[in-house]
Length: 303
Image 1 (tube, rainbow, N blue to C red):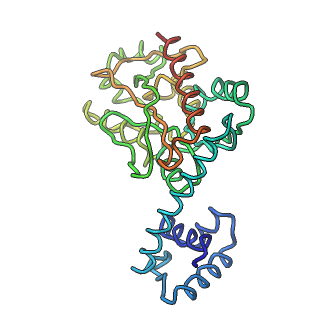
Image 2: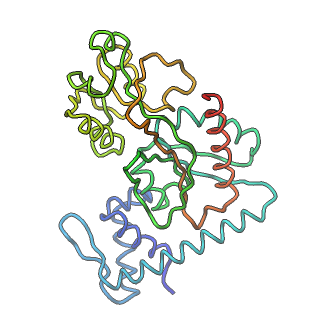
Image 3: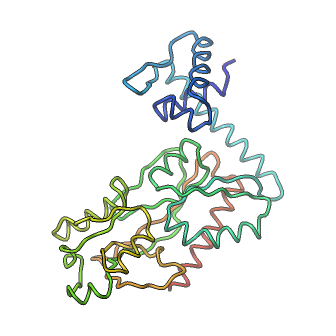
């Protein structure tokens, strides 16, 4: 019988593309990964890997093994979920990935609820950008992710992930009161000649913000680039930049800048995603319930 640990290594090669990335993800040395895959090849009796530049690709025979390995891992994850369901109280570890504004707005109250109502559970939280976190949840680096989707900009879809919408928040132009007065800013087009702060290229928020500016008739002058939303707010407060700011950024703090509505009053969708095989695990269900309760409380407070 083939060794499941070695089969999982083969699957990780398909997902990550290099032996070094597999080794880093699973806390192995690259030489150990290579050795285990060589033993798997010897057991199967056919080549499983081909070098393609710096990356490694799978042979057709390896693809067959990976497809069956994915099925086996899903079955085992479902079995684990059923075992935990049989327990009287939700327990165990949940690895959660979350982006910054959601972490600041939702996690303090959510973590307090988990600790007080489900002390047998352990929640480990990592801040990560949504696109990367969705992929990492698919590859089993995380159990649950809080991600985002901007209007007209679909978030990455992984067929193995189960998505549940959590809340929505408004997207508005953030400008200091001083700049509003100096430049008579009433809409997005009025910011065309001002410096902008945006998230790094490749993120959904950056793409959406650039498209919004272009639809308003100008190319934004992005002088500041950072994923830190708190830095966005400080740059806007000080009059050094303008930005598109979402509602969650203001949870727990006073609004200190002028917020100007965009045409159509667009809203960002915040959602959770988990692998379908583990989505019914009591610990995952509890986390989603607590996050939903926290989001509802925030929404009712804002209203």
